[in-house]
Image (cartoon, rainbow, N blue to C red; front, side):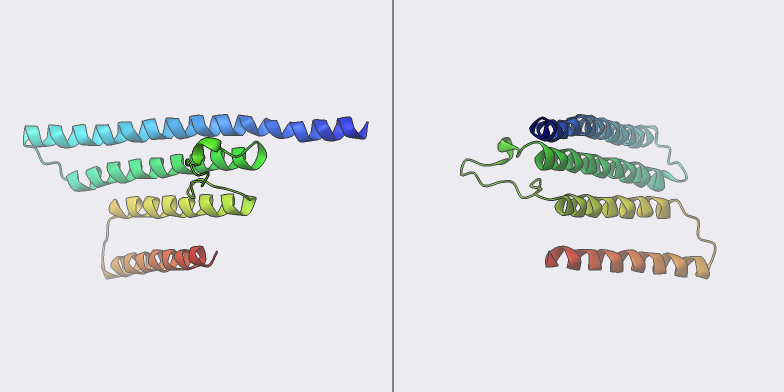
Length: 171
């Protein structure tokens, strides 16, 4: 009875395959949507230059469109890391990720939940930074105090990224 239960319990790890499959589908969807956003931004730029009309917030709209797409690409990367990590942790190592000598790709190699968490959290921080800069691009500044807050927020992001880099090197 114990052997049957343990083998059933061990086989239940294959339920993770659902998260892997739908994580990959989510990544593909995000990459497609981000690519359409870039396409739409490029179409907007081209139509603006061909019509010789320069909208009031042209640069902000272009930069916002591209940064929004980068944000989606980064979230897609999170989904890829999540899917690859779950697969390697619960199902099997990905043999295709190894070269001919058997050496594995360091970017996608995940051997513990802590490694998966670290890789995903770093990309999520980058998503937040990109989102922050996207919001900053559309902010109206009405005086010196607003500019001071802006400078302080940029400094806080820079300091946070500096320490995140330091922590990553110590692991």
